[in-house]
Amino acid sequence: MRILLLLTAIILILAIIAYFMGKSDFVVGDKTLTFEEKISVLHNEEGNYTINFSTSGYYKIYQGLSPKSINWSKIVAEVSNTNKAVIENKEQATRLFFGVIDTLKKDTAIVSERLIPMQGTNNFRDIGGIPTTDGRYTKWGMIYRSGRLESLTEADIDRFRDLDIQQVYDFRNDIEIGKAPDRLPDDYKGEYTQLPIVDKEGKAYQEMKRRVFFGERRGETKELFTTVMSKFADSSALDFKPLFDKLLVTNAPLLYHCTGGKDRTGYATAIILSILGVDKETIISEYLMSNYYKYEKALASMDKLRYAGLDSETTSALFLVQQEYIEKVFEIIENDFGGMDNYLEVKFGIDEAKRNLLKEKYTYPAAVYLPTEEELVEG
Image (tube, rainbow, N blue to C red; front, side):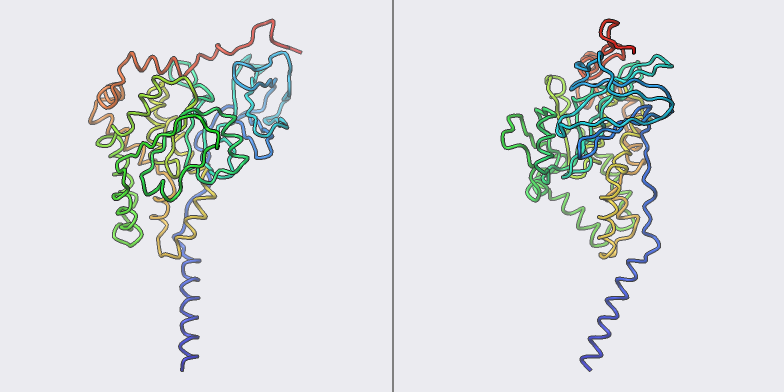
């Protein structure tokens, strides 16, 4: 009898596993590159760079350790009627910037990797090089966004040092930080500031997780996250103000992050890019890139939660950003505040003068880094 009961239990367990493994509603969608750029750069963990062009053409490539220090007297690669170039970088931790000249269109661009290759976190991004509506570009190497940093490897720490980040703003609550405190270089002399959004102790955060994981809000998770983004835009917006205040006074690279680097961090990035004059469509495209950079990690996390009986809608809402989240933010800004200009002034005290100051600090005209005729090698 006991053997029969044991066999029945085993069969039942296997059936449950098979059920969750074969659930047809576990659909995430393809890995989609939402933010398409004319020139994009990938930097792998071995240090090598791949420069991709949206169209085949003829390009000359120069390099340097910063946008200002590009050596225009030495061509490091030439592209002829193709759309890719590979640049070796033996100093793996050292970040390179590239000057690219389109020899047919006579255009010049400054580019670098947008995703910083970190083994211990998968959404560490530079928001530089993004075009604004007034013909400028956001500055490279000044503002970074990421997820939590507790698992940075020694190689990651070396890259972190190379970025010269002098301020770290942590949007997480006490519970999140207690479980996974940031790992920064032992010799880090910059500032670390906890800037908890909505809930410092983490009680509301824990309650929301409980209601989702134990079924009280299943099927409503997307609506729940839309409501959370609404709070960021309105009732909790003031929590983000110290970050924007710091941007006004600092001249050093700065990083802000939450746990996944997608919701609290995504809202903050949308506001910063809005301040700097980036159009709404580009901001939404950049926001959605969290799904691209976190795709494999999200799939793995969602797969694990299938065994807890969570459906694909719930897990997608937990681990992926949705376009309606960020559109809700813009809807509130437009409908409740009459537009971005008034919103920035009412919520954060950023008037036209402060906005112009931030644009001057964190954007640049395309011509500012162009080589002189004496510097440039044409051959």
